[in-house]
Length: 272
Length: 264
Image 1 (spheres, rainbow over the protein chains, first blue to last red):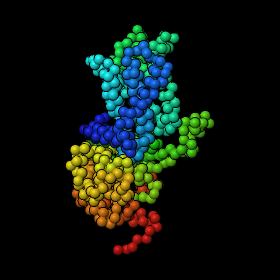
Image 2 (image 1 turned 90 degrees about the vertical axis):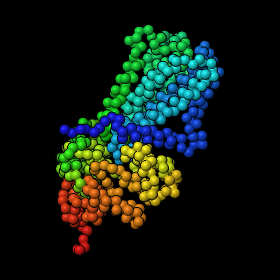
Image 3 (image 1 turned 30 degrees about the horizontal axis):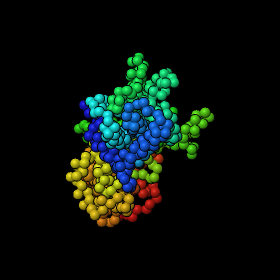
Image 4 (image 1 turned 60 degrees about the vertical axis):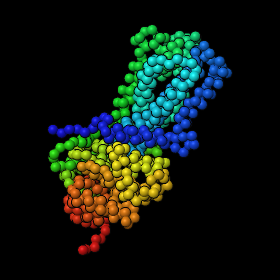
């Protein structure tokens, strides 16, 4: 007899999502002289420092072909993960004024803020590809296989943002706690050191590290983009049932995050 | 604590009822502690303290609003008017009760929601339009009219932070009146700007009234209630104390406040 209106991505929500994403992106670089260039410069500068310290001073990774690009690729993906989760977790508070005054699906706020990170990543990936070509990596159809791994990393970030973001509304400590966790995670993921270094001392430790979805995604991207000599979860852990764990973790986290968010989002307007 | 949840449903039917509200209750949990964080929450849990106090804002409202009615909602500060409007708009969840919205509802809880001082007037117009559900293309089409109405055309590429508050409200109002919906919810957005602009606002409300638009208007201005509304609801302490003729409700409200009315 009557038709219910709410649909997940109806026209109105799509318009809102794209406009919020645009605004977020514009505001990020407002009032800076170099503007959008910062989106490129930040990861490049981080890469320059890490390259100098780890590759030139500590002589790590000299046995990996195209190591500078390998490193740049890792730091780029890592920056994406941290930016995506940080922005996502804080988005509900940042957009509190909207939530308190109009009614719309709350996930739009989280997704729009993480999409800004996706735009940044796409720009940065172009830089990585250019560097790869300069460094002598041969272009290949395998490059397309980077996309599923990037998507997986995005879903992971989204799951974390939904879960922690909804708790963060009431307990603002979450932002600080997540900052610390991210710092620790950085060393638990083979971004600046090659996983072979760990495998040399303990195979088990290397396997545990590779069961982390972030590590799995980054290694997959390096494998497909830079060198097939990359150690990945799939070629290091023979048992497929164990190797699939990172992917399952991402799905599980996304489901938990979405459920928690759906439950809590009803009260965001009152609590934010 | 497990919170009860009422229902709010949006439908599209031929029924002549635009909004139906049954036994609506709402309370807020106000934190009693000043500190707000994980440590306090754990402390409270250990000590068995709730950490908040329940404040009842709406205590069982029942009313139907028919299509074409221009309803004024009046009441003192804290009587629950704005909370009611926010629940109708879908911003707050009803704690108990049932709400049925029949038709496309456009809420204006506040003018210029989403306005950002760091963006230009132009960018803000598109952003604000998106919140009303207008695509870029649709905004292109009405863009000039908006600036014309606001009388701010020379400032369109200035950042919003360089606008005076009066200019901002005028711009927001000019965008808001573009919204087309079956039901409009308005919270105190009457009469903004200088006298000349107020006249434009008045004309707009008169036109809504004349064409039989369904409107719910929260206001403190009994003059507006008498002029535009064909029904008014008086709220006091979260309950409806009077529902009917705008003139009677306006008098009752003034009496409640102890305002002596001049006899005509």
